[in-house]
Image (cartoon, rainbow, N blue to C red; front, top):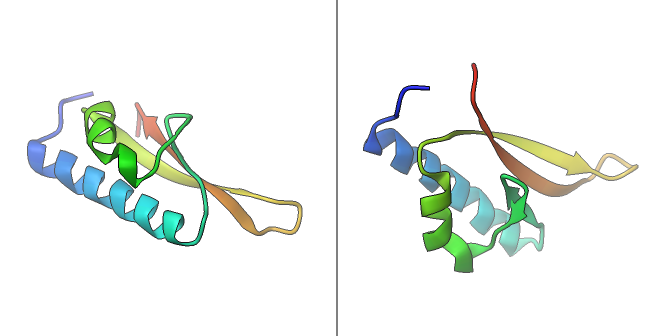
Length: 77
């Protein structure tokens, strides 16, 4: 995949951080590439996200309620 511009990287990072902040406010866990992150991990997450595009998904319980948010990097469109 072609390396994305720093501008797009920052937009992607800002989006994920915003989602983590909102989820944290309601006590919902968030994973990025399979690892749990909180706002305390924001600087480390910036490095982890490097040059990836991310897709957001939800994990629900048996009643359809969202229990967790996941971000996984995608390699193909």
